[in-house]
Amino acid sequence: MTNPVFVNSTIQLFHGDCLEILKEIPTDSVDLVLTDPPYGQSYRSNRRKEKFQRIQEDQDTPYILLTRAAYECHRVLKDTGAIYMFTNWHQQGTTDYALSKYFKLGASKIVWVKNNWSAGDLDSSWANRTELIAYAHHAKHKLLGARPSNVLYFNKVSKLHHPTEKPVQIMEYIISKGCPKDGIVLDPFCGSGPVLEAAINMGRQCIGIEVREQYIKESISRINHMSIFALPSVGLSPFNFQLKEITT
Ligand SMILES: C[S@@+](CC[C@H](N)C(=O)[O-])C[C@H]1O[C@@H](n2cnc3c(N)ncnc32)[C@H](O)[C@@H]1O
Image (cartoon, rainbow, N blue to C red; front, side, top):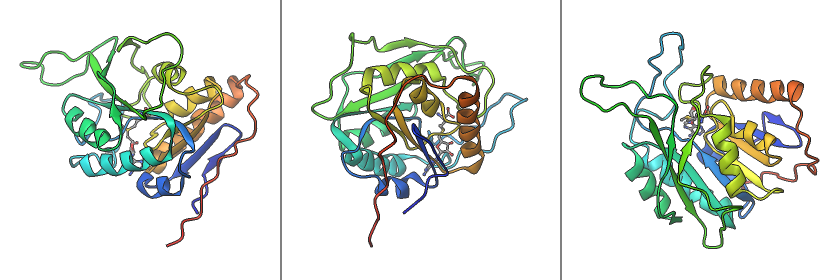
């Protein structure tokens, strides 16, 4: 059984390969998977000030990784659960294909419109201001609250701790639509931990998994920073989530 590298009443954070650790998560135990997996593009920030390693598993097509992760996410999600997976226009076909093997795909992609655009081919490509989020769910899943638009406007993160860091605010919004108040969120590719921070802010419990130690440290530092400056006011019962023993 893998032990978490960080645990409190709200968060359990695991360091390792999610394809292994996901196997230890009990079936039907999670309400929402919200995740931003590698895109298979060997991404590295072009910003000169930020020096990051290339993202793990980001060199090859992520089809096998995403399909295996989708299989495990389908298993651990309750029958009322849903999965949101960030993707981009190169990988949306791969992402849809992996998710559709196990889930009912949402009728449309969610489009995140950013406050400025990404770099790229300055001469021949249109300046991209959007990112895509694939949404899929189990048959009994219901969106919470008012029906959301599939176009979301959120600012990019200005000071990055991860080369593809996503804003906490977009994670909070998706959690508010997809995870009940006493629910558990899972992010198997948690990077620097914006989903963990959003779950704490929204009073949900969260399980994070990350393979690179550098980003585990960023996640822990993020949570520790929050507990100093912004203790969540919600009174959650103790985290009753436990990994199961795998017998081989
Ligand atoms: C696109 S990034 C996520 C960034 C995150 N959303 C953030 O804002 O910091 C994908 C992350 O998945 C991690 N990763 C890649 N393969 C993994 C695996 N098999 N198990 C767990 N984490 C993995 C990478 O190290 C990387 O940090």
